[in-house]
Image (cartoon, rainbow, N blue to C red):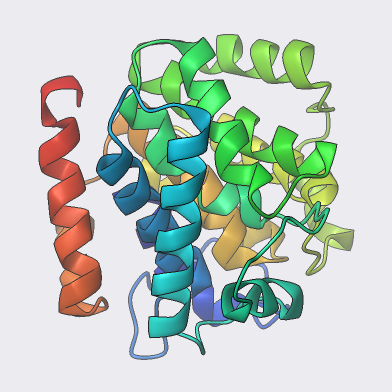
Length: 268
């Protein structure tokens, strides 16, 4: 989960095409901040821990709705889309058919909590369906969680690429050099997931993954949350980067991160 949160914080100041598409930049500056990507990642983590590892669909979805509404109301100005914040504030919220990349940016805890890729994909689907119940939204969540699961269990980058291509139909043939010149801020899964995956697939470390994201630009906080989550599972995160997270999170957010790290420690 650290990988997603750090990616979000670093990418926040380049969002909305504010960067110059360079790999040469300082990771942490006063302009960096957490956004809705971090808040909802933490909401998902808390919900899944509260539900329990073997919880059924009804229980998981009930905890997700409760947690996402709670954290959304606590941080209402974190940068949510209009339909999502309306969902947060609705008394009895229903999914609204979104195919936005929010389903992929918040799902990283799922990739760490379960013992099989089948269970990982099942729970990832549930985390999407409470809001993003469009097939592309669901695919964004499942594919991200599956890639994290594979990465933490020793799969190669080539094996992960093959799985993402064959199971989800993503076209991962374009290189970052081909993507970067014309890529721009866009928030749907169809034009976020392949690019985020490629940022990981063309990297050789967590740091390079994040630098790859800023090289192509676009919805940088979300791209970095997705790519960074997979990169953490694959390489880990250098301690000098990881230790900066408490500088940017509130105590209540950090408490959930700490709880989650203890939860996954046996399998991390």
